[in-house]
Amino acid sequence: MCGIIGYIGNSDATRVLVDGLYRMEYRGYDSAGIALVTNDGIVLRKVAGQVRDLDHVVSTMTQRSCLGIAHTRWATHGVPNDHNAHPHMDCKGQFAVVHNGIVENYRTLKKFLEERGHTFSSETDSEVIPHLIEEFYTDDLLSAVIKACSYIEGTYGLAIITLRQPDCIVAARMGSPLVIGKGQNEYIVASDLAAIISHTDQVVYLRDGDIAEIAQDKLRIESRQMGTIAPEIQRVTWTLEQIEKSGYAHFMLKEINEQPLVMRDTIRGRLNYDEGIARLNGIADHVEQLRDADRIIIIACGTSWHAALIGEYMIESLAGIPVEVEYGSEFRYRKPVLTKGTVCIAVSQSGETADTLAALREAKRHGIPVLGICNVVGSTIARETDAGIYIHAGPEIGVASTKAFLAQIMTFALLSLLLGRLTHLSLDAGRNIIDAITRIPDQLSDLLQNLPETLIDIAKAFKDHRNFLYLGRGYNFPIALEGALKLKEISYIHAEGYPAAEMKHGPIALIDKNMPVVVIAIKDAIYNKVISNIEEIRTRSGIVIAIGSEGDESLQEFADYTIFVPKTLDHLYPLLTTLPLQLLAYYIADLKGLDVDRPRNLAKSVTVE
Ligand code: M6R
Image (cartoon, rainbow, N blue to C red; front, side, top):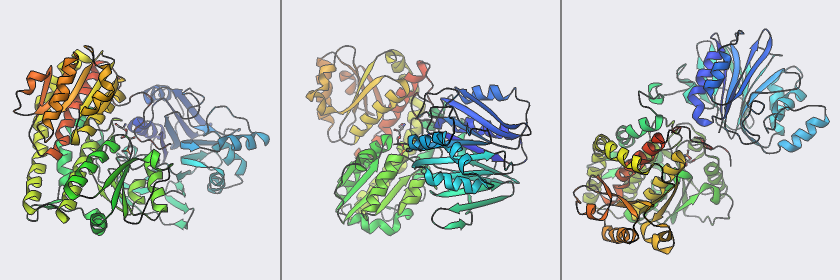
């Protein structure tokens, strides 16, 4: 949940590190710090606050260095203050460590270290790490880190520097992502590509159990399982421009506006009109396994879980294969019945979500094949699944997931088309779906042109309300959940999503003249039922904001506000109805003056339980 970075090379390390922190700030933003190896020893600066506060502090520093580490924090143990900010150091100030993850046995380790005379200056779990290294160091940092790591239970991405060997960084990974970028006579290690990409496109992804010794001109990797291994250099295709704001006020707005392009990228090369089918090369060897599965279990968290629900509806209705959707966090701790014939699919934007990862490992332990639907190439989930589909949404920086959600839904549309054609769907039906899918990018572009004005007006009218209800049915029930999640996570307004018909079983008690209810009421198979639900709201003086299908003028009679989306097939409507809900949440949060891209208490990649 934190961002870590280390640099060794010929450039000014302070600048490289602070610029890298800015790019990773979405991973955590309650405090930040930097440690540099200089002629005056290790120089340490830490501040509670954002990276810009650290930038301000380092701008007054006179020391220069070409070797250092830095951190932006999302607190797990110990409140966000200067002491608890990273880097952490040992007793004599010779080792500095930045850590992303949780040391689960830190109390035991702390007691052991205190008994051996170590003193601590923070409330964090992470501080045990520099003390362990100090305890085990004789003359080689790599060996000391290997030994320290063998004592740690939990997760870590680590970067460590020491005065005793002022010519290297040691980095270690277990459960928290780490990438090493190789430049001209320089290396950058970071928890995120975003911090590396402006320097080089040559990267090495560390695996769990890897510990790397990084010198200016040499990279050595020790794998826990395989001993010394040759670094496997890969080329990154994401550009820096893709991960910058390109003139938008926020990443979230930029990412919402990128969705037509993303849809094109998700479907590119994957539709075969002649055969009315989708082609998904990443899972080509597993398609029959899916087609013949007794049951598919989709595992995910948060927004990805909502996309998984839509996937469930699509696969069951187009291909007739039973599907269950599970929260990663629940699946891993209950005792799921995993019979032969079950196939799991793990869905994750980041590919690093701890709960989803643990659940997929649990499924693998039972011998169940696990496929992945991920955005981040080379991420842990992408690597640990047997095969998978990349959604090609490009880097998503805003903490609130938007374009990745749409790309996940589109991926499920492709998967259900593929499985449908292998089971029930006729050629004509397949072609009809392909026609509708290919219209989606332009339909989204039109919406992006036309919607903002109306949504800004609605946002102005409701930004000070304390509660919202979101209702939808069928394919649009998960969109109601997602609309409510978007609003609550960035505007801090309480919002609930419900299947529209469930309202009368409880939530209807909340409805009065102050309750805005967003209802997705598109002209699909259950339209009339949704209109009845709207009537129930109106009868109780609730305020109805309806999302309807273009041409359905009569909807205006039932709703206080109406927003129309173009017509499409029932199962593809979520690709269009999501957009107004994303924009509504965005404008409300922005009008409230909130930090849209970095909502309080959240982090982009939830790598802790
Ligand atoms: O990276 P993942 O898709 O696995 O992340 C899952 C959730 O943490 C994520 O979707 C979260 O709910 C977002 N903040 C939603 O906007």
